[in-house]
Amino acid sequence: MEPKINENGKRAMFIKGSKASSVVSLALQELAAIKNPMVVKYNNKRKNVLPTPFESETSLEFYSNKSDCSLFVYGSHSKKRPHNLVFGRMFNHHLLDMVELEISQMNSLENFKNQKNAIGSKPCFIITGPEFDNDETFKMIGNLFVDFFRGEVVKGINLMGLDHVIGLASNGKNAFYFRHYGVKLKKSGSKVPNVELEEIGPSFEFKIRRTKFADSDARKRTYPPKKGKKKNISNNELKDRVAKIHLGKQNIDDITKTVKKPKALRNKRKREDIEDNNVNKGGDNEEVDNEGGENTAHVKKKRKLSEPVDI
Image (cartoon, rainbow, N blue to C red; front, side, top):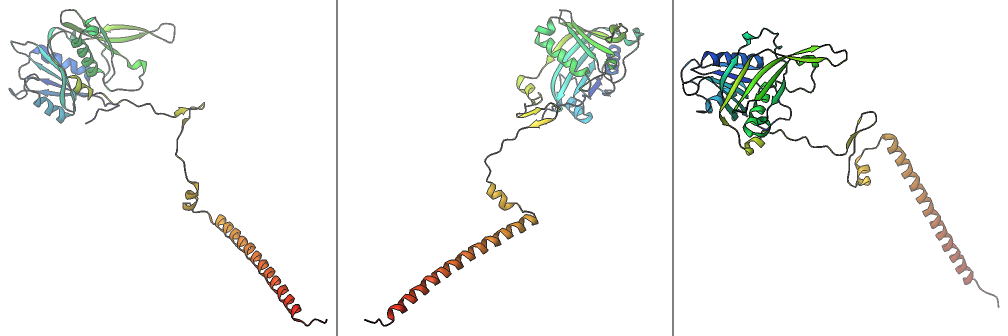
């Protein structure tokens, strides 16, 4: 499968492990609310049916192909790794990147009484902190979160449709904050409104545990093909598309032979041929007559020479 120039909206699997704490269950539920409606939920009730992504990738790839999802979140809880979330993405239903995060702190939607974002609306993103600019792990995490929550790719968007913002901020301790804000547009006395942000939840503090990212060769295969610049194509003053076509030398004689002429032109050609033939026949008769005249004169001369001559 080749990468697409224009990708479809990416669906996400929200998988609850066989052992999950109430914090993990609530986090999966509220993150799915932000991602709605492009969500598929799995509840791993039976023990060891679906192992964690770092233990085995085959089960995740199977469910990714089954549900046609290229993103996933796996939630689990254990004594060694409490309140654990694994974010990841696929390419061609094969694992590409994933990162394991610990939920250090969480503030639920229930603690925010503000108006929530509309289902299916596209968010804005604010990513701050020097780690997101300099550290490769943080760069990949930022890229993964943008890819996870951005929704469908569109050419244009209405300003009124931007009703929420997702913010990521590093705290310099191998951790970062996840914040979710609502957008309020207020009058400013001009066409451009004043924009205010208010937190609508949920909010998290994540600590980075394990990571697994694709190598450079595998990542290059996921890049969409570049749109080549088309030569000799431009727009005129009326915005019409104009193209130049370069052709090789053409033999016009061969083209005229193969093209069937209309009946009027064929009749004209016949008349011209007939006239040319008549002209040629008339010239031949004159030459014959002249030759005949010369022969006649020659005979007459002979006859005169044969007559008796008086001395």
